[in-house]
Image (cartoon, rainbow, N blue to C red):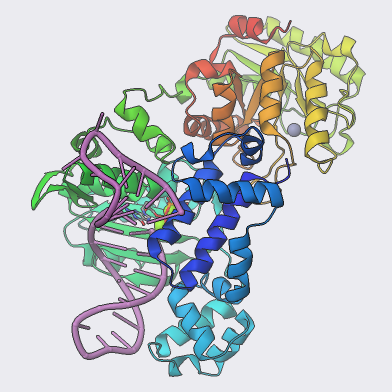
Length: 573
DNA sequence: GCCGTTTTCGGCCCGACTGTTTTCAGTCG
Ligand SMILES: Nc1nc2c(ncn2[C@H]2C[C@H](O)[C@@H](COP(=O)(O)OP(=O)(O)OP(=O)(O)O)O2)c(=O)[nH]1
Ligand SMILES: [Mg+2]
Ligand SMILES: [Mg+2]
Ligand SMILES: [Zn+2]
């Protein structure tokens, strides 16, 4: 699959950036951005859809023109419009718009007035005091640009959800203690439980926003106050994380939660629905003319635009509004539905706790089972087990199980998928296990087709129950290895294999969209923590949240079954 | 550039903060 959706989307976003610098019609700019989002959200590759002759203009926000441009990109690898725009607009202007407070208009003005060629030119101009000479710019803007560029890195940094929690929980507790704050909640992508967050968005209810914000910016961890008004403020924490605080009267709480939870696309869709009903929706309420008809609760806001309340995890404008309208919202899986964990390590390989300790921790969580999945022999750096050691572990598990009531350890392993798709233990040994998790831990750069073939070949072995962390990505550290997810899912479906949703907040592999595609094709998902210590079992909630973002219900998830049912489900042909 | 059971043309979400502004455009959420 030569051109990926993410690349097509990036090209459309780039077109939008360049058009914006040229002061093109802003709705045309928005059309490219909307199309980019649509493409990014598709589980199927555009390239494959073009190949099949699908009508791309059926996709939301893709019309005949953009369908043609997608086809052009798929066929040629290029977009003529983008090539032309790139000749006319220096890339450095687009780069400059990444400086907070500098948008397309001001970036272009600076580059043209001062005849700049690069970001480094801009930095020098700021240092030499030439920016303040440009009409419409002053000392403050100049100082801000100088500071931002001196700090070096202007690329947007995103934080893992678990990292964000460490900052968010004490901060929202602080906000709740501020005089005059009636209540406060974290909204934004954090409330939607996105795998990474760009910032923290905190909503507070109170009458005197100015006073509340004065206290907010005094928070110990605040490094810089970016902006500060009567209803909203932005600060940067020492860790580099931005925090937006929004303060509204309690009567607007629901509308403001709706607004601040987003996503932006979900908000815009909701506001358009309001328009269609001759109403107006903003963060203060839903209005019929001057009259507020709702706003205190989210339920009231949704009701006013003819919808049931929608779970925050679904608010991405990926069909949830249409589903809500038809009363077809999914019955999302809940943490309580989880009956056990199917991926965990012990001191036998690279874990930090014993079989018994892991078992006790699992029982404490109310589980009926825990699969012990230590590494296989090729994983020498991760303490991979020899065949003998695994045999011994199987016996040890059997012995321990005799002492448990209403709980059992499952004898398993996380067996390496070797380069040719063979497994790292002999079939005879694998046959003794309750289930087998097979994972790729080496040769990430085989190329998409070979990598996909490799994993499918592993699934050809009927011993394989689950494919572990199917893309190998590490959030913020390592990209997924190239793999054809649609083909992988189809193959898993044909073979009765389960795909793992690795719940470690460092992985969350599969993604929300991939989970959704899998269950749409009838493939079950195992939400597994890959715990390397007893504490790791608690990562389950991240996996459940990710599953919810993928529209999964309990029925779609293998480890919502009791072991007796799960055992039957895992049995292959 | 997209879209439409009241439209195939004329709309396109709506509001806060900033800086340099003499009345608001730009940027951002
Ligand atoms: N109506 C409307 N709401 C917006 C717009 N931009 C942002 N919002 C709302 C929805 C967002 O979820 C919320 C917080 O904005 P953020 O920029 O922090 O986005 P979000 O938290 O969704 O993602 P993030 O992980 O921070 O990048 O504000 C907009 O242009 N219009
Ligand atoms: Mg945010
Ligand atoms: Mg924000
Ligand atoms: Zn692994």
